[in-house]
Amino acid sequence: MGRIIAVCNQKGGVGKSTTAVNVGSYLALSGKRTLLVDLDPQGNATTACGVKRSELEKDVYDVLVNRATVQEATQRTQINLLEIVPSSLDLAGAEPYLTTTDERETVLKKLCEPIKASYDFIIFDCPPSLGMLTVNALVAADSTLIPVQCEYLALEGLNSLIRTVNLIKQNLNPSLRVGGIVLTMTDFRANLTREVAEEVKQFFKDLVFDTAIPRNIRLAESPSFGKPICLYDPHSTGALAYQLLTQEVISKESEVVV
Image (cartoon, rainbow, N blue to C red; front, side, top):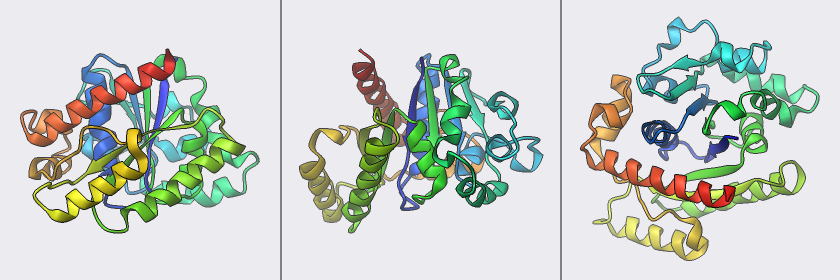
């Protein structure tokens, strides 16, 4: 049975989609059957995987709102074993729809149940908010992966997200756990990065992944070429970091299953 991981942070610009795409890519390259579900109307994960949004026949909006199956909206990517349910701007209309639906928090969970056994990992790239799409992802997920940029006020937003995760765990998804916090866009030459990293590690201890993701121009460039970093520049520091992070994710999730 596949593990479902929600990559989430209500703050934008923290490397959330970059993390979802590249962890998903390295999971696939590690031999894990992986499905990436783009739940962000901005569609950054879709673009980064080389899927042309203008040519989509069905996307995640059709799954959530128009009763299309997940299989009908799933597309192959350039990486063997990695598939994606793409997003479009239409997805912005799913939030108000979901708020008026019966059992609104469990729509995504029910849609994923028939396909969970077909994958080793399902990765949700959540929107930068704590709205109904993110709530649906957290209700369906086994764990969360939380990217945190090393800047002031990082802990404030992180605490808010952890509170939301705990509320969902208490009321809607008892098996939900914080799978890990990853520091992104790091530059340990800067005092700010070192200070924020130390603060996050002191507060969250073992929840923080050992691997931090550096600021890397190749990582920033790769989505505009429609390629995950493993295809765009597999020898870059960003590629190495995501490869190491993915091995940590596999190890942590394996411990839970055991």
